Length: 231
Image (cartoon, rainbow, N blue to C red; front, top):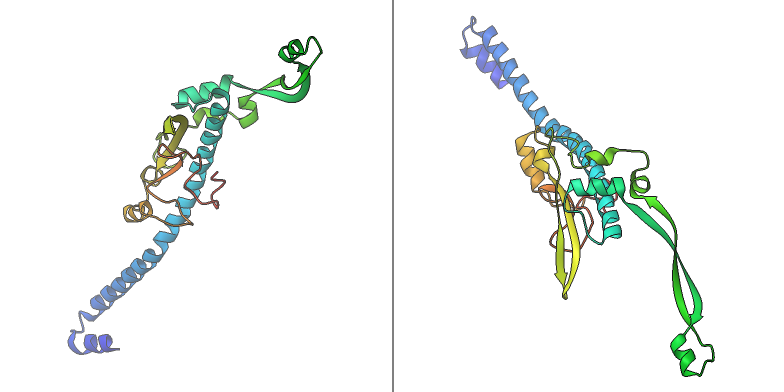
């Protein structure tokens, strides 16, 4: 009411329509800015969650493939070319362990030829199963597992593998990750800065989505279980 009174009292009649239109434009602009300040973070989070879910699905594929590689070869693959070749060619060996009694020649000789038996475990090879069929069935998605599926076009996951030495024992480790700035590269910069600083039980901590570690022995992901199995 005070603003209307001031306009009516001090603004010349000819300028009143222009001023009123300008005021309405200003009110609309401020209203829009207020709306966007609330809506932009909501929109950002919707897109972020959708993209993170797709990235995590691929990181789970990478982890499953790396765990299979370690199971068969004893180490993690150093790169995606080696990992994909492994999936294409490697096989799991299906075995069966059975306990039995066998002749203990040393003890039989000691007892003058009296047969003496000892416990033994025999491992029988039953079959061979392709790693590809076990992990991916008929899907060929593993051939593109190095590509980050959303965000900056053509960007790839970074992956490292090596060993950590603990008590003179070398333990194989690996990590694979995608930086959030790549995944969210076309979204609001200020909101991306905030996302890179997230520390929360409900969020993906740090500036990247990652699985595994080169600094400790673990193959878990840094995302909450709301996105998918992280271990």
